[in-house]
Length: 318
Image (tube, rainbow, N blue to C red; front, side, top):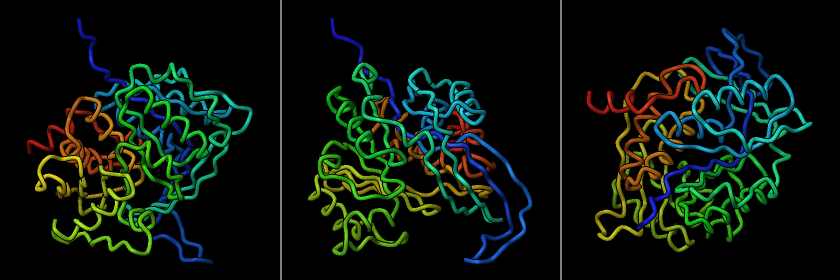
């Protein structure tokens, strides 16, 4: 008798309290502007991705650390209420991480993060038993690189698809790149990763213009890459696709009236993880994620703004 395929998602990384102020425009250096609203919400890239994946049908376990404070309680409640298993989120004697966010009238944002308890997450927190049923392991760089590496190795050893969101951008060891099955970057991060020889096309470029980028990523040991282009959609670079015509796929943007783009990238990442765990192709997962991320931008905040499967399907069918 064959065993059922693995379907779990393990997200390893950060949980932050988002301190968000809304304003007509973002201040210039040295300038003070008036705000017109303030909120404290649950956030952190990994917590956001876990909530997004869970609300979109994934069975998600989150590994991280929060402080023994009210922000930590808020984050544990928010993720657990979204259906995420938080039994592996450790309580630390260091204060919960925070992100200070400014959002302008068009929904664009600027963010400063302070790691707090996230900085205490160690490789020893990443135990192999957490990955036994993992189909996808979702990682970002808001915690220490040694911990990210340990999680990538555990996911690889478990036979899971390791999805690395290269954000916030940092140089990654060659070994981590080699353990990553899917790399998710925006256009700026793609340029930084590939270096001076890269010529990442602009959002309006043809599919053919992306061929050198696909080849450069493949030469760096990353045959499957998602490049997000903000309001212009995304590009799937899949060097493992059988036909050359399937190796580069443009994903059209989903047009919405954006209110707050904070966390939309995390919604995209979580949606990709959920669909990959469900057995969908990389291009199919990116198409689904485009709609999920767009819907997330239509409301203020992050986790509370994330859509369900029904929300996504309703917009796709419209």
